[in-house]
Length: 368
Ligand code: OSB
Ligand code: MG
Image 1 (cartoon, rainbow, N blue to C red):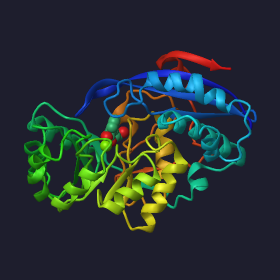
Image 2: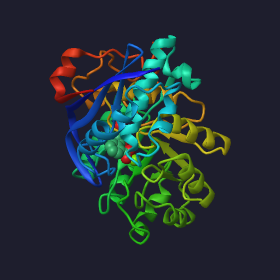
Image 3: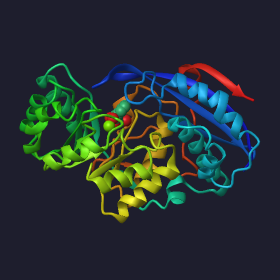
Image 4: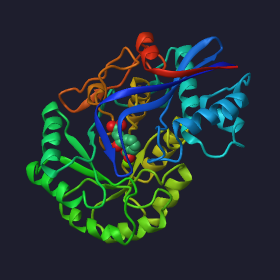
């Protein structure tokens, strides 16, 4: 397919509730929506970089710059056989994986629309519904946290992830575990600890958690291996895994026993599927992480999570957990068994609500 044109939209949508992680706090969510036209077909991609560099060094600002100045100019007019082939064309652009992933996502949407196939079918997904959980931001007290978790459990979520940071960790997680002894529970530190300060997390090892996500630095693998050797609970890496090579090295070193796969973080669906394949071969459970996506990225994540190795519930919650309105006409809902149904229509399987897209777009840029 020949890439003809790209339009960038900087989007900002208010969140239903403040989302706080160890490094940042937000009341709304920014992203870049890409409209790509190839062979006359329009496809959408979502760049999951946030407004601030709290989770990743990529931001909406850096992504806009890299897309406008480097990625899109390198790809316009190019004939790309498969979505994953863009990486050969742009291999001299280092990093900026979320920006690259957004372009790849749009090409998957276009390929699917052209061939009349869903993302799930093209990826080889085996589930029509995927198990999901909810990621709960840091709250002001253990009592409020327990109440927040209770609300989500009442909505039907059967797996809960708690965001933690130093001094907002053990007490909070113990309170939730006491209130809900049987719930599937896990925590995510977003790299807030060091090998030394992570000693404070030792009491978590007795709470029957599914996993402890990214306790140490976002660029570390070695210290995580040391930490894993001191914990019974599985360590799961998120930020530290940017490629299949990282995943292989982390597993070889014993730095984790579970991997959170986010297509944006690793540069796109092709790399995400490759990490899945490696983990499946090695019997390492994986799950699909989330970045508070709009319906566009959510549809893509659901398709990814339908692959057979995604045996743990993903951070893919119902639309209403995040937003009052969405830029897609599709409104993803939670099934009673704590699953969400994977879209089956061609491509991403979503339609854009043009009115909402306009309403939530701050800036727009057409290239060329
Ligand atoms: O670490 O998984 C994370 C959101 C923003 C940045 C980092 C993370 C998250 C989440 C949200 O946990 C998960 C979701 O989209 O529901
Ligand atoms: Mg995480």
